[in-house]
Image 1 (cartoon, one colour):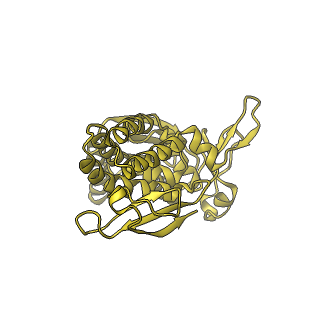
Image 2 (cartoon, helix red, strand yellow):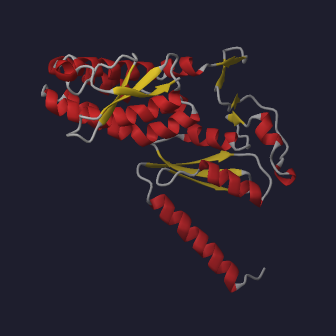
Length: 287
């Protein structure tokens, strides 16, 4: 078989790109899994769905149907990658694509679906009981399983402590927040929540640690600004059971203004406490 120089160069370039991409992934784990598909168009879709810059790369072979997954084990896992690929229309032995998404694939991409026991990747993630029966998990139940509810409750408790200018209490609750952040199982979060979680997790931990490590109310309030910003992004996609009020004080942050989240529409300012308890307003209601 003869190979043209251009083909060799293309292959070399692809190999180099894949190698460089993998080198940028820290704590890397490499695994091979089967993903069902047919053609080059499938390959592009599968790899695009699975790839995350500096977090995960997917290299799928249309002939063997095998994919090489390389990912940062501290930021994601095999299940999350396969879930994203399933939501793009492609089955694996762990996750089935939603029927609607599969049916919308181009004709040449509609591979033969093999009957197998797997979790169907849907917006309200499904699971199986011990008898193999489907059990749909609601978003609220999913959050409770992953302790996001505890994370949110800890945040509101920190806010209340700051409203009362109680630095000691804010410190103690922030320590609980740190613990609850650490035990969240991100592979069980819904896809949109998971994506935001990866973005804000490090910052949430850093700000919670700063609040936990001091009883200085001024420093705690300073770190609470950024904690609130990242918590807002997480709550926004999580859609909690009850309304959450996003509030704003124009005087906080040295006159630059700052936001916080509250379970109550009535304003109780965590940045000034009793000095300016009702300074601010609700700027958004999250439902």
